[in-house]
Length: 617
Image (cartoon, rainbow, N blue to C red):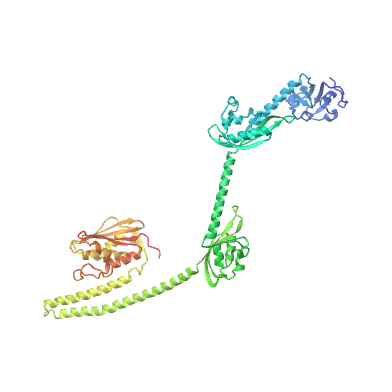
């Protein structure tokens, strides 16, 4: 078949069929005038185009028929629209002996009027199928209703969300999906839109197949024909549950932030300490009333100024430390002295300053918290003065006690020696009564010396402290028992395991020695049995020293801890009445306590607590 020249003029008669040849590269090389006429194009403008570049309707995109025919070696066809006309397009490969990519003959044939409706129907069905495919694959609910609201189409997401099947959607059963509280408002809005023909929008809850109610944003739009009549309604429902929760959470966080801000504002203004916020240039941005009063200047008088401009006489000056805080990012606590506008008197302030940064770490300025510690400093100075005076007084007291005891002991020793000499020289001629009086004199002298030693020990108890060391309490008790060496049948037993602790050794031994000696002295029986045990009580050890002596009546349980207090006459039991008071003073000076459990005829148990770790001085 010979094709007319490509540049032949278009015929005025309606063309029914045309042909074109595409080369192995897929470009048009020859075409008939009818081919160009059917495409409503000049033949010369078609030369060199690919099949896909031919002017077919955008509503009917061209398939790659030429390439398909070349690749498969078989013919292919499709229906396309050009303006108001419908064409049947056929592509047939022209085989070559060499076996290379063949040329392709493309034939265009105009469809008759009888064939057009069928093609229209096919195209409409294709569009509908494309529409359904599009809306079925969107992640939201789409629907179409008639003008009166009767559902015509619900996409796949509707059925997946509600768990319903298409057969259940007859009539108004979609109402069941709407939350009962939201249904009246939606029905009213829908009725108004149908009446007015205006779009509508609302948020309501949909019932999911698992029983959950999720918030959706519902929108409906009217679709109109060429005359403006509503032919149907198109709508969508978008799941906004997470968005709504996010908004509610954001609102809650905003309200919480406002509450926190209000609380911080209240705290900022009500706190008794001075507070201020400075920018990067160290100018006052905000200051509370406490600091303004402390500085003797109004709040407004501070804003926009630097501390050095307002208060130059401060040492060290806060501005110097502010710059250090901005440079290093560290928090600095310092004391500053000087004068403010509130008073010419030199004051002392304790301040803490820290950097203020944005969430991304940008430097915004510094904040400072200040307390006027002038009164505390004066109180500390007075305390130091009193402590120094007390220490001086204690030293003088120690010196006096030492001198007094030495001066008192000297004549006592002379009396004791003189009494012994008289006794030795006149032993042969002294009567029994005289010898008894000499022994009584000697005993009074020894008692007076013991009393002096006791007073000296009491004055030093609790004041003289030694260096803590590791103490094996069990070994310490054995050493103390050896010092006392109770005569048989008297005995001292240590019950259970005794702890190891860090403590002052001598004061602890003095407590054990005084309590054991007190038990031996006042037991009033030769077979006295003393038992020592220990238990843990919180941060302390509680030691108990019990005996099988006559016991002590409850009314004397407090009295015995006083100095010079004895329950028996000194002629019956030799003692100074100082031993238990020394115990109490030593124990309480270390943060412990003493107590007694006893009744007449049931022995006595003395308790005292001793810290596991020495208290800080």
